[in-house]
Image (cartoon, rainbow, N blue to C red):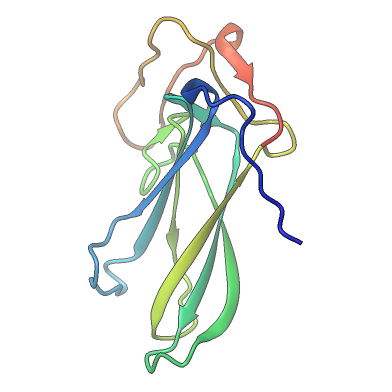
Length: 154
């Protein structure tokens, strides 16, 4: 059985968009002084999504290319603005360092994003909301309660 799904309305402002990247260049090695950070940006249209549940599933292929040695290891990403790697709370960019490496090899990851049991929301259209504080360790995007818009199930 094959199940396919597509949105009923293709309005770009209604779509949930996911973008992912890391802090390392292709082929750059991880070491104790250079940990891998994974970033995932979640937006509805062009507005940040906050309070989503963003998870990364890591797997590793051994150095000889013999296939996955390790089942998926799950990491929950955060948008809390507490500092490296997440500098600003509420900007829709979720991140975390990978601190456990079970073996040497080539790592890959899958991203899973959901509505966090209905908690995910975004800022409603209106005047631009900008970050407050220094871009580190406690900075945040101040979204007034009357501008918070629940997203619904995704």
